[in-house]
Image 1 (cartoon, helix red, strand yellow):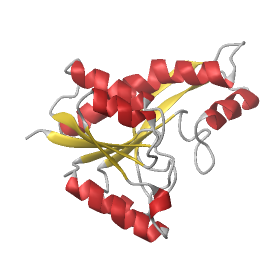
Image 2 (cartoon, rainbow, N blue to C red):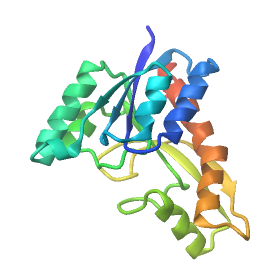
Image 3 (cartoon, rainbow, N blue to C red):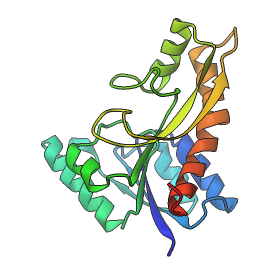
Image 4 (cartoon, one colour):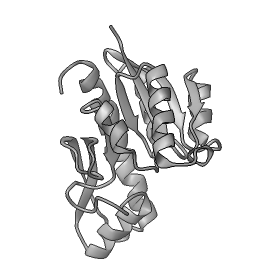
Length: 198
């Protein structure tokens, strides 16, 4: 049976687009994008999903009094979507322990560095690339990993290195890491999961 992949988003949805494109090319073996859930009602990712004919749902943090209540609502949405695999693709909220435990080894995240470098609390978006450039590393990349209770701490599934250029800015580096690593690794990891190879 085809595995149902649910993607959690908060923003523009570039990694979601990479998954949609891979699905259209027939690269998501034994799985399909069943639903996109956004923490932000204005996320452009929702539009990308609609254009691809994928069902969408908004579970906004602001609508819930506590983190516990939010986690419950998110769990209900994931259950309703019958998620076999959850992909965090630019999801800007840290998931509660209850959610993480419910989907142990069935939830993956893509992080824009070679973990264990430049990861953990506070390292997201451009901050990761700023840190890499400040530190002066010559190689960075992206990592797809299972999600556990530790931010960026789950078991690594795939990594891909990307060279840093002399004239890189955080923005140019972010773009190259996405194009050369994130958008390649994420569909590959989803496919491996759906094929039962992880």
